[in-house]
Figure 1 (tube, rainbow, N blue to C red):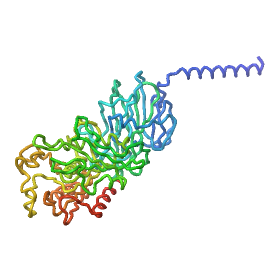
Figure 2: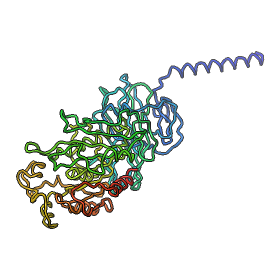
Figure 3: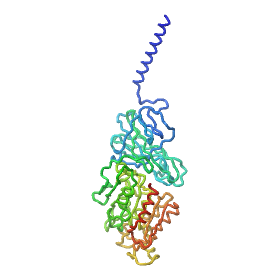
Figure 4: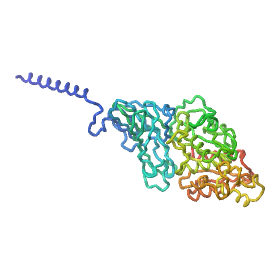
Length: 507
């Protein structure tokens, strides 16, 4: 055989080998594991390549850091999410995805876990989305603060843990035990909480999967396009078990894209009267939106001779918070920047929400809707509030002067109607006292009270402020107002004081 013939033979063999290799590659199962690739599905890291069925190189080897948004089992929120196609990149997208073969082809996405959280702060629950449009159910979270014995979303002020890797399993329609890795939250110093949109997904069926964004960026994060056409909503029902207007809210959202911090207001009325239109200066939709805040005012169940108000009123208010957080994306709200405000009886409810936001409690009634969504707020302003019901008469005697009510106890009294018992100073349930729940995790709160208030002693506000500052030094401010009575704090200086306080914590 000549040298030329030998060379032609070698070329022919090389071509045949190449063709056979291509045929074998095309017929192989793309879902089967390749060494070191985790089943051929990409893992996204900070700096964020999106997920696809092929292994994509990562631009960063650091830990994943998805954004903070709240979980929602409501499809309206999930429906506002967008998917990132395989191969595209976005510096804000992080997380990982995985898939296992199953003809059901259902995907569970976990998005919106924040990047860092301060000690004493609450991690907003991530958003779960089912690709088939169903609502995620049977959610089982792992990696949350408190471990397996007392898991919660609130990080202890004294924790030694440096990070939390949050994972979840859930059911989508008939597909059960879908798993997703939501990412890692790093524990930072107070004020260090931040967020970026992102998350991870786990799919059943096929080898392709997508990272779905469901998170809203917080202050300092990138803006999203707000598609909310109607910026003022009236009588929006927030609870699933209601057929009248005792559990509705009004919401006004500023113009622009947001996402916007939210002020939630609870009216006064002695626990027995009032409604969402009973506002107290400086809290109004106009004042709030002019300063870049969305504003919600809510109705809740009231006390009467035939119906107690506790704990039902607080359960309703917490449900309204969960509703607003669950729908934050579609309403152009930032779920990480919620403020609770209220006057008189609403000031009491505000104080309760403030202390419950840093405590473990049983006031979240999942039967009213949005189970698993956080009802915590980040800051609070309370006006003319009741706090410790046991001290009301004693404080009136201490301060002297003329009072609207000679006693707060006894049959038919406001407190008796609210608590559903015939009250005395010694039989008030500890569960109704905000001081019961104060801890090092209590959020910042400003309490305003007129020194000439002849309905609720100003020392009621002083009690709660002192108790908070004993356990969470500097978190509470007492703003006593000379020559001011029960509410109607309307001058421009007081308005600036309130909004400057909110700005410091939410902007």
